[in-house]
Image (cartoon, rainbow, N blue to C red; front, top):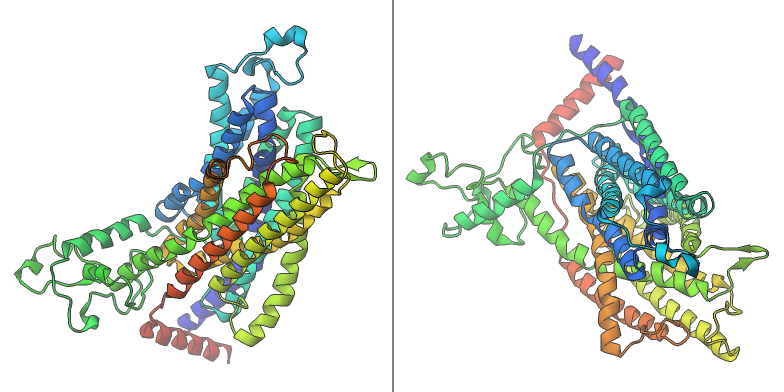
Amino acid sequence: MEICRNVKTEAKQLPNKGGTRAALFVYVVAGIDTMAFISNGVSLVTYFYGYMNLSLTKSATTVTNFMGTAFLLSLFGAFLSDTYFSRFKTCVLFSIIQVLGYALLAVQAHFSQLRPFPCKDVPLSQNNQCQSADRGQLAILYGGVYLIALGNSGVKAALPSLGADQFDEKDPKEAAKLSSYFNWLLFFITIGAMLGVTSLVWISDNQGWDWSFGVCSVAVGLAILLLTVGKRFYRNNVPKGSPLMRISQVFVAAFRNRNLPPPQNKDDLHQIKGREPENGTEILQRTDQFKFLDRAAIMRINQEASTSSVHGPWSLCSVSQVEETKVVVRMLPIILSTVFMNTCMAQLQTITIQQSITMNRKIQNFEIPGPSIPVIPQLFQIFLIPVYDRIFVPIARKFTGIPSGIRQLQRIGFGLVLSAVSMAVAAVVESHRKSVAINHNMVDSAGPLPISVFWLGYQFVIFAMAEIFTLVGLLDFFYAESTSGMKSLSMAVSWSSLAFGYFTSSVVVSVINKASGGWLANNNLNRDKLDYFYWLLAGVSVLNFGFYLLCASWYKYKKPELNQENAISDKKAEGKMETCVL
């Protein structure tokens, strides 16, 4: 009777944890966090240049470094989340850091003593008052900016994993919801980004930067409160040790055992049977790739085996630990093959704003602000994501039997194809824009050309679709393929592709400029060869897709090992529960 009572209690408690209700808190918090972060990503150049008196080049470089650092530091946040803190605690801690960063910038923007006299629109008579920011002012500026980058990085690493933890990937019903979760996560991120590039950009332009930074600080503070309110609904993970340490142990043990003969029977390799390993790795079947790493699981059977150092974690690892390392190594080429797409995205975000300034941005009497142009692809994404999740996935699922409709690697590959197509379309649109300038004798005119800015919508809608396939596919892929002890790290690895995309974007422009003799050397887009630049990006994207096909065909999905004892105990528990009900 006592067993029956316990089973009934567990059955009643389980539905109260996790599921879509718990994920809703993550969705909203992700939207708020993105709203604050993206609004600054698209408009900080104006603040740096017009109010902190940084040069235009320095302002653009600082923003690029800020964005790239935020994505790259997610690896640090992931390390803390998987090793020391739970994902929930990591989100709260790093969100507090963000609040401090926004508050620091708000204070600096409010008090003129903490800023140099702004050079923006300074009359010639007051030109002597225009001066560079001193060290103290720059210290406050960079301190606030990189506190935001650090705080946002931890949230990026832990928050998507916290939401995904609310669905059991081993349960067929919840596995389908898990794939849908990443689609709706991007949906709310897109809504947040759209609010950021519209409402918050308007606040900074019309109410002042102190108001804009202040609203960001308050919004993230409210997000912390909302995340905390949902705590009782979460399935919280328990940190299971450093995945980086486990990976390092495999490489060291494999090197130490390099001279040992491999066993004739691969079943003689060290493996933990009958229970879940204590260090957080799942029980995985051995694969034939990277056989040199299998040496880390070779057991010594001679007299040396009596010493503790020989059987220590730096000399002997389980097959599951070795396979966990193989998963990470197999993931690296996949992430590298998506970096160039994010480089194209960075170029599209920056250069397209410059293109829009030369075009007609009016809708009747309203003129769309330049920094708000990214709202165009965001509107497409808000429409396309529900179509993909509610129409495409169920239809594809009927044919493939896969919960997500198609496999993650297929989804990523389709996104890369669309990325190449969008670059080609961007080249065609740019050629048309330049032809309008030539036909109307407005090549050197500073006024807007008689061509609607919505011509840019063609490339935007295709790239929006590419992002839906590739970005969500990457998040889903890395979460599904990583072991339970490195879910946050896998999210950070997927975000690092964006980081390298931002960092390499300026390098790509410089290299192409030098190699081409100055396709983008003029300050006049009507005289530049931007269409040639887009065609080159399209060509390289095709080559990059070929590289991705090689990586994807070579990749071997992880193979969890069925634990018969656990399966039997589960069936017994189900039988007891049925008996209790009867």
